Length: 272
Figure 1 (tube, one colour):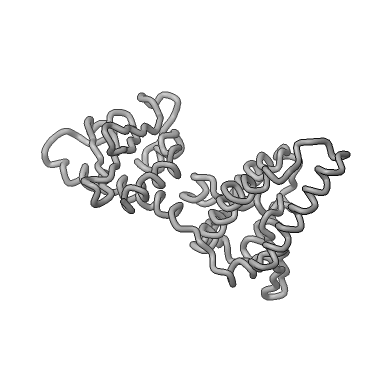
Figure 2 (cartoon, rainbow, N blue to C red):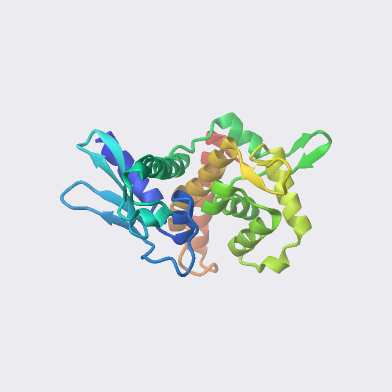
């Protein structure tokens, strides 16, 4: 039962694996508009055993919970030409290498999204400013619109796999804030990058202007975005009165709800 629940969570978290950008990373092949085939993720629920399928041209990765015991990942290459490999038997070792590499990339992608719990000390440190080697970084307070947007932006699939530059992140950050990329200056993004770096959430790739998430950064970004989207926002929605703000009973109910939330935050030690 636990294995089945785990695989259903894997399916839920990876429904976008069939997009062209993700497919080219999993199979390590360039995907363009001329690449044949449909790019999609299929979830097949024949009987009671669901399976996840990711296609590239005439090749496919299938993943399912085998006999209720373990997660099984199978890669089938139906045309060796998909990977520029000949069809002779001597090419079998190269095809095995390609298949195992694709399986490994897929499992790594799924692994990073599965466990994103944060300890209390790590969470509290993010709520306070930091100063390292004379450089100061402001806090990344949970629920703050800019903090949520920047941590959501760095979770873009391609960024997790390949890293990102100032310009790459600016595009995604602007969209999440409802702005245009040109409205956010490179200096503003440098400030956000420095804040993430000093909090230990990203690191600069050697001899480049690219950054990548650290293990702690990935865990933190997933924690912030999931808890906010799946717990805090849905839980707060029923508390907001649907009547006009001029309604005295509705205002009293809202103030009582706000006080209850504040008390819960104090008890749980997550107050800003």
